[in-house]
Every structure is written in structure tokens, then in C-alpha cells.
Image (tube, rainbow, N blue to C red):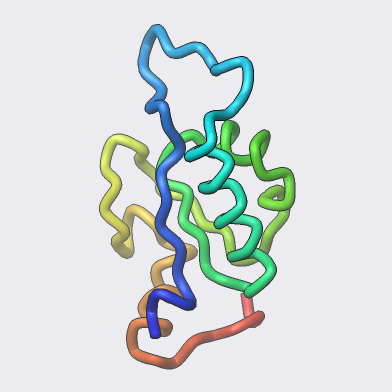
Length: 104
């Protein structure tokens, strides 16, 4: 099941020109961070579409996580061969039920 192998969550509040980090996370952010940690425990593919630095600060285990992928353009959040070159083959294999596991 795809829901068990790929995680999609957003970091919020969304960064913008005048964005300032909140002094402490709100409960819904803490929940998102807990989901990310659980995904790491399950060896799930994680795609950071925006704010990689903020995610790594909030969930330090993401640093160096082998199944973490980023997009080439945070302006375009489509996961495609061009925009997520390293992760796309892994995600495609999952969708075809051919998960590549730790082969990354």
C-alpha cells in the first residue's frame, strides 16, 4: 500500500518573504514531526518539497536519511523525472509495487 511507503506532509506555517520561525512548534507541527520520525523508523520514502533546512532542524534524523529526496525546484512541487531525478525512480518502483528498499 502506497500510504505505508511514501510520506507527504507539509511544514507550516508556510515560509514567505517576511517569514519568522515560531518560538516553539504548535501541536499540529509536533504531530507532523512525529509522523516524519515514524516514517524514518519504517524506512519510508520522504520527499521534502520545500523548506528542507526547517525540516532538518525540526527532525534532525532527516539529515543523511538515505530515502529522503528533494525537488530541484521548490516553486514547482510536481514529483517528476526532471524535478526529482534521484527520487523519481524509487517512487515509481513503489507505485509499481517494486519497492527498491535500501538499494539507494
